[in-house]
Length: 192
Image (cartoon, rainbow, N blue to C red; front, side, top):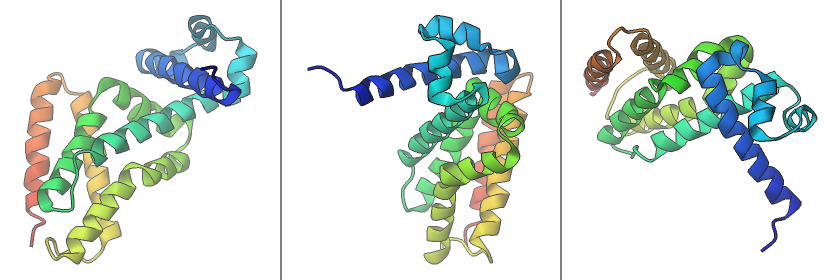
């Protein structure tokens, strides 16, 4: 079956984002070269800019793609019960401690796309799932907390900062194990 123009375009965009993610992970935003990207992908610079507008536009599309993948990973581990909530928080920590995610999403993205846009994407994907979980647990009285939104920001900030701690550790595996244990302990102290 012959692909439509839209299907070919979506396939091209997917391939570009995959390779761009690899480049941004390895070289960072500043070190990634659009010339290297277009050569590896087999596109012209004009075609790349047609789809994404600029290197920053391409980077933002990669950031959004990572947010989507992270949200999907979290969604597959969560459920409406307490253990599902813990599993979702641990899934985000696991995703956020992957070197490519740390480099692109946690280190470069706030500076490149701006903190406000980063927060919008985080709210659209990951923190929305976290908020839904918190609200469910408060509504079912599994946890008692005066504000779901306040708890969202406290937990989201703690988990993101913990991911950066793991990234900067001389022994990331040991630090990640310690971080996971500490996160579970912190979450368990929230239970009513």
